[in-house]
Structure formats: structure tokens, C-alpha cells
Image 1 (cartoon, rainbow, N blue to C red):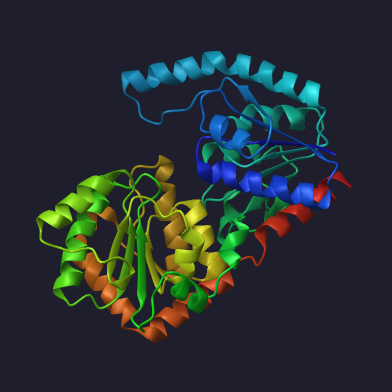
Image 2 (cartoon, rainbow, N blue to C red):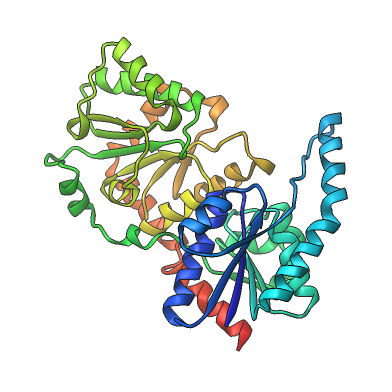
Length: 373
């Protein structure tokens, strides 16, 4: 088989495609894999690092505002669309795919659209609870729409084409029990573990709240272990805490890292997670049933993070606090209250398990294989 994956823009679009590519290679060692992405997207770095060939199309974003600079940007996007269609057609003509799968990002549109026009089996996967513009447009022409949550089905014009598959996560999220992870991190007492992070880059406002959060927990006698990923605000946060006279004592109490490279291990050890509500994060939380306080980013297209978070909230699987309505001390009160309420944490874990698809990658693989049989 020749399988063409098209994705880009964010790691949340790219990583599911890579997980699926690896699964196809596992089941079909002789298959050929090609990726198509945007000429200027992060897929240009991530995809080759994973050992896959990438071809690019010249595609631009859509701005939803109506300022002159946004209108000008969108006019340029429209003008370049014929170019992207020609490049998509060239990729498909050269590779001759048996299956084309889009996992999000603007680059998916011309490639999947052209494949559908030629009668090639096509599918799109949408990790977010509410479809983005690309998925919404493509859902009218593809053979299958693969979604993360049952609640998402009603957003699509052809529900009969929608399959609830979940969103693939890295296999190493399944490798650790809570007990094993705690020991690996050097945690030997019975205090609960809190994990907090604001995405790979961090978020300045939320890291300022985190400084107040850590000050409050230290004043309270450090009632739990706390591991925080600060991203690019690491130097500021550690300097701010030092200026407040707060000693960071690692796994024994409060540990601040620039980036959490061993996220599967740390998340397995955690009793509660405080984080954003991107699609990949939501999938990881549901896959291993970790209760969370979600603070959706207000700086994303179509407010999709809050919509993701509200799905979990409706099912009793998470607590949602909006960034403009919280601060470090209110976050601390919410976290400490949950960590003291073991019954509620257990109920949240059960609700998360009910939302999870046991093996999303395998579910998607089986659905895609049926398309080309």
C-alpha cells in the first residue's frame, strides 16, 4: 500500500499521523509512507526527524478578524489557492496513494480534497471536540470522519460517515503504574503528587499565577509533591521564586522544570494534573484516567480548548477554570480541595475511563484498512 498522511501546524496534528504511520508499518512492513505538509510548518522538522519523507504545499492560514491586515492576509491566501491545488495534484500523481489521511492543519485541505476528487479513499481525523475549519470543509467530501468524542458526532453534516475512534497517544503512556512511577521519581512518602504545565512553550500569565500558587503551597507546609513545567518562562519563574525566598527542593516537595521530557512517567505518578486543554493533552488525560483542573487557552482559534474542556466537565471528568476568572490562590484552593477529596478524584477517574477509547490508534487503523479493502 501507498499511504499519504497530510497534517501540520501544531504537534497535536502531526503526532497522531506519526503514530498511525508507525502502526501501518508494524502491520504492513512493505507499505510506503509519505507525508504532505505546509511549506513553513513545524512538520518540516518533526516529520523528517521521525524518518519519513515530506513534501510540501504552499498554503496559508485564514484570519477570522476583519481588520485590514487580516483581510489583506486572506486575499493573499485566496490568490495562492490554485498553486496549492496544483502542488497537491502533483504529489498525488507522483505517489499514487491507495489511501489519504488528513489529521488537521491547513495543508490537509488541498491534498485530501484532490484525493477525494480522484476517487481515492480518504479520511480526516479531528482531535478537538468541535471541528476546525479544515475538518468542517473536508467532512462533506471524505469517506470517513474520525473523531475523539461521541459528543462530537452532531457537528458533522453526514453523521453516517463519522466514526468515534479517540485520538492516538504515545505508547509509553501505557508503560507505568502509579506506584512504579512514584518510585522512579524518588517519591517515597504518601503525599499526593500534583503535575502542572502550560504546554511545551509555557504561558506567561499562567506561570505568573503559578508563582503565587507555589508560594501558597509552601506557606501551607507543602502538603503535596508538585512538579511544574515552566517552558520558556523557566528562568523568570525560578528567579521570581528565589526572590520570594522559596527554596525548590525537587521531588521532595516542589520541583520546577523547563520542560517535562518524561511526561508519561510524571503523569503516571500524578494524582491530579493542572494544564491547558489542547486535544493531545485531553487524549492523554482520558487514556490514563488522570483527574485534571483545565484552564483553556483563550488565545486559540474558535476557542476550541474551552470546548474540549467542557466535554470533560459535562461528564464529571474535570474541573474547568477560565484564565480571566482565576489566579494563583484560587487555583491552589481548587487543587488542594480536590487532593483532599479522594472520593471525588476516584469518580473523576471513572468518568475519564468511560470517555476513553482503549486503543485509539488501533481503532483508527482498523477503520482505515476497511476503507481500502
